[in-house]
Image (tube, rainbow, N blue to C red):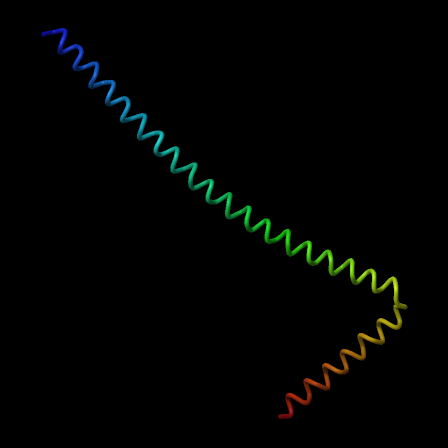
Length: 96
């Protein structure tokens, strides 16, 4: 009988150890899953920022191309004309 009890206790200890290891692995899995979700969110945000930065870069390059092609004073005159147009539009809207 002692051999059966010994085998029973050994099996019981193995099962307890397996349950403990399973619990530890489950905790590690949950931690890794949460970290993965966070990293995916950060990656999506970084990609969005990259897209916005690329759009701004294209705008800056386009602006530089325009400035190089046109005389700076002509560009300033055109901007001033646009500002005057916007101001007069605002005045018209405010008067109604």
